[in-house]
Image (spheres, rainbow, N blue to C red):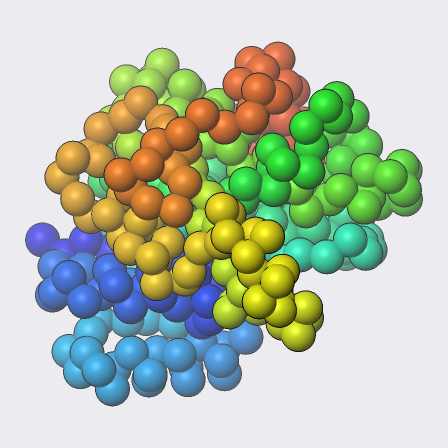
Amino acid sequence: MTKTVIVTGANSGLGFETTKQIVAKGSDYQLVMACRNMKKAAVARQKILQTIPDANIICLELDTSSLAKVRAFVVAFRKLNIPLYGLVCNAGVGGKTVHQTQDGFNNIFETNYLGHFLLTQLLVPLMEVKGRIVTVSSERHDALLKGVTWPGVNILAYSGVNPQVDGQSYPFSKLCMILFAYELDQRLRANGQQIAVNSVNPGLMTETGLAKNKSRFTPTVLSQFAGIIGTAKDSGKMITDLITADKFAAGPVRYFDRSSDKPVPSSNLSYDEQVQDELWNFSMEAVGLKGNE
């Protein structure tokens, strides 16, 4: 039976590498490239087909900075009438400058986290019994937030409330991806569901779109960050393993650092069950879910 896997932000960087490596596993896998720019998605798809001619790849439009577009994506996916095996929540934006989305949220918070929260909630009912979910976080969730107290999700979600927190929107959004993974795993298990959930740190990938100013990566700078640097290829393999390898078919949820052989502890804050619950409850209300979708 064909296993269908959705990868968000699949047209470049980590998403592209993950898509390419999963589909290279053979005809057992069908990939859905969920991308904001369909022209770029088509080019990326064609690039994969040049090396893997029989790759089974579909492109569907998805913009996680818009709740309406997330819902439209799920409608389009439902029309394919196929079960979902895997979901890789990868799409994201970086930077320290934020603005308000059409939904009224901090754009980094919504793009990196809240859009994926809604996407996952709508797709879980379509998933196979032993499906798999991977959320992409970052070591920045810990390194840049050491000693920082949780400001409250109401501060994180809306730009302009606290300028200092706005400047930390990226690491906080990546913290949210881990908090979400931990809470999701707990709730799925409580419901008797066997979907495996994990979160990952792909490392500082200097070759991807998140690293806008590549001129700053001089040999000196690279040596300073040697301990946290990752590559799209290696981290793509990590995610591919988590989605495809038999040994990751069951939980509990873990956080992996640039390799599927390297589960590590995430930040102390990420294990705060009260924060996990606060974020979940806020998110359910923010995306308009009442537990009936």
